Length: 308
Length: 171
Image (tube, each protein chain N blue to C red):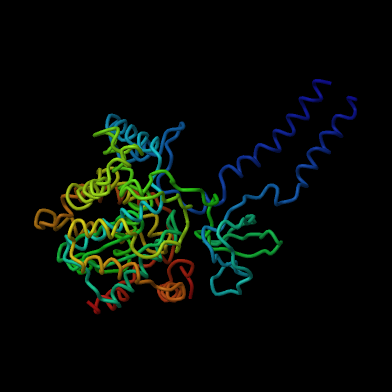
């Protein structure tokens, strides 16, 4: 009798095991490339990214500690995220020459941006795109879905796939909530009581303080370089999901690398060294699935840039 | 009893193999409202249904960037893979009390994927800009940025022209 039961159970296990594996793997996982894989052995995403990018363990531990701290706090909801984004957007207009109000060009930028935004991990955010009237070569993303590119950047690009590469990177910052997580972590580390609900109620100036920190991050100091690398990785994937060749970002970074040192753009102070980004981008592209027909769209880009 | 063991084994095995496909199939969800279910794996083929956000579909197979699905009503069709998600929308955030930033009343959490529900500048952002004496033009610039939209139809035409998105590789 026990023998019979063992046989039956064994047969069942044999039948059920492959089913479980198939369901666990998931068709969508197979279809949609997950850009940043979890580290084997139950490690976190950060372990995976850090390992892939060659970041040393001490730095990883610091980042993990910060992220865990941020995760332990109550997350910022979408309305608060949007309000923070709006204040940052106003700061972006103030600091970078104001709005370059050109409907045809903004429409084109928004169409490329939305083509990518709809295949990101937060497709239901209201994304907005604008051009800043600045000769500096730069792009920003504010929480809540606000994306900015400067006229200087548009002039430096030569194809839609390059623009898609840049927008993919910016959309990754929003999708991964890089700024919000950094803000929460920073505030907590400097003064643990600052972000408590009681403290918020007592301190109506906190919005100003939060915006100051975010502005400093975005416009002066830059995000942690590991977050910039992560934005590159996700951005490459988003661009390819949208149907663009991920080489767009690589081509732009190659051009940027030649300018490094010669340019005084704030871009070089708020992002990691271009050579370092380029190496990681090239490594990632080599590992991405090769798909035929991915778009470059040089002519369409040039046609639309004539509206400048 | 011993003689019946092989029979029992085969009955159980047969039962598992003959389980309806949908019990074994993976379930995915519409990532947003308006997800189209096409007759064939092509955006230009007949639209059989339009899904609301979070509507479940059972996966039957895939071809290129399309997933073959079965809807709750039994309709079978194809959906562009990036319009499907592994999970339904979950409440996102809900804790930081925005009003605490300004000393005002409570603002409740909204769910993720609320797309389109928040319009216009939020009063706290306007208040911030005024308190900081930021030029009125920059506030108007943000209003213009939020007002400026491209329609879904425009986006579809744009993707078709560039053969990107669901039109990748189309002729």
